[in-house]
Length: 124
Image 1 (cartoon, helix red, strand yellow):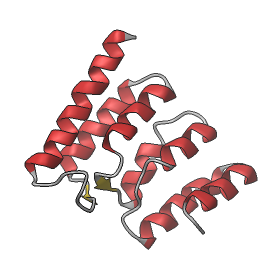
Image 2 (cartoon, rainbow, N blue to C red):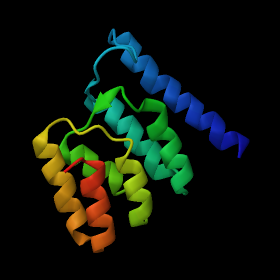
Image 3 (cartoon, rainbow, N blue to C red):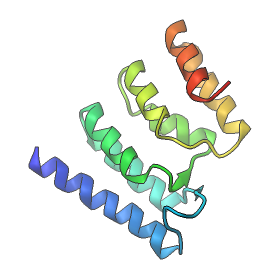
Image 4 (cartoon, rainbow, N blue to C red):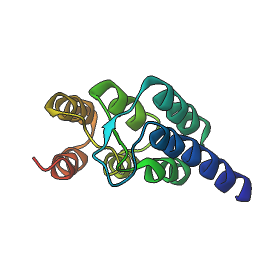
């Protein structure tokens, strides 16, 4: 448990540090996540076995980055269950309406309850 928390802190520091190095802080509008930061994030999410750990990573960078459709669905795809994907969706900032459309298409495979909750989260 302590080791996992340490890795969450290390990745969060790296990703947040990446944002600060780019001249951004949490007080500035989020910008699209770049390829290097996204690759690092996905690697960490895939190495994490449990949803709680994956959500910790997303919480650590929430508000810093915007995700395009492919990135958003790749992040959501790292979760095993629809309810966990909804929790992840709450922490992802869609870059534009195309991203919202990609997320909705991703949730088409989900049971109706999850589809409607995804729409609510996306404010549709």
